[in-house]
Every structure is written in C-alpha cells, then in structure tokens.
Length: 253
Image 1: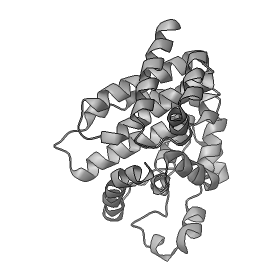
Image 2: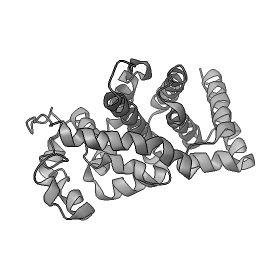
Image 3: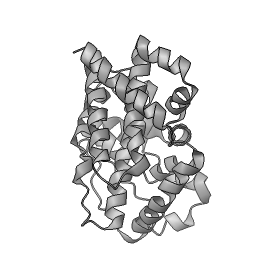
C-alpha cells in the first residue's frame, strides 16, 4: 500500500518540480492581507546554493513578525505556497509526510493557533471544485491542481485541526468531503487521490467520537490503519467511511 502512494504521486511531483524551475513566481507585498512571497524558492539563483534540506528549511521560514501580521486567509495561501510542501508526498503515507513537514515549517503552528482557522480553511476547501480540472489543461497544470487539493485535505484531516471545530463546522467539513469524493469519482484524473476526501470524513467521525463508527474501527484493523496513515488501497475501509458518514449526517440533521 505504501508503494501504491509512491506510484501515483511520484510522476506528478516530477512534473511539478520541473514547472517550479521554469515558471517564475510573482512577487507580492508583505501586507497583512497578502500572502507571504518566499524570496528563495526553486528556480531562483539562491536556491541552487543552499546546503541541502537544512538550508532549504531555514530559507523558507516565514519571518515571525510577518507571520503574525498575516490575515488567516493570507496565512492559508502562504502555507499552501510553501516551497517544500511537496515533501509531504515523499513519505510512505500522507500522515508521515505531514508530521515531517509540520515539524520544521512555522506556518502550520501559526495556522492551527488561529481562532478563525476552521471557518477560513473550510471555506477555502469549498471553493475547490474537482470537476474544474479540464483535459485541455497541460499535464503540469492538472497535476498542480489535483496535488494542491490533496494537500488541503491532508491539512483538514489533522486531528489537531478537527478538534478545534464547532459541531456545525464539523458537519460542514464532513458534508464537503463527501461532495469532493463524489466529484472526484466522476473524473478520471484523480484515481487513488480520491481517497484523501474520505480520510477527512473518517477523521471527522473519529474525532467526533461517533459510537457506531468507533465500533467499526475496533472491528476492522484496516479501517484503523487507514485512519492513522491516510494511505491508499483500503477499499473496504473507504466504503465503511462513506456509509457511516451518510448515516451520521442523516441522524444529526
């Protein structure tokens, strides 16, 4: 199952790395309502002089004073534009990837501390339409869009984030995750990347401590494994999450 993730993600990442090297970024000011622009990033002369990953990590930290001034919306944009965000996909599972990247990037800690992060991040998620990806787009553009949606879902699946949501926000997130999953199934561009939508849904049910879902977790080791890692290839677990999510939304309507 670990190999499944690598087989799906590695070709896409290769295209995105190439695009980062050949497509220049657009600079923006450090005003509070605008995202932070990383001055050192792939494609800049400075990037080639950095001493491996430690140098890249240091160069891509958001200055503390800038970090504090960013609005939550601008902060989300800054996190999603983090030059080392693709490292999330370099591990055996999305959870391992997130744990690694969040351990050295200061944007995540700031984002999860914002009191309005729930509403802002869910609103951003709602604006992403899986069906917006056109076959007329270049492969690089398609890859950028699908990977970015996956990264948003990895962030949304974090228990640290879900635990701070109101019950209304949890229902909104669960509903949107199901909508995203359904939309992905109607496209042939996502494949196993569709699974991350149900990882979000399953984590919401888990954090909510829904009793019926907790029973399912105890009886199905694969379900527990999928919820822990967010990896690909757990088809039966996905079906359980889908069924239980619909039941939960119906029961709590």
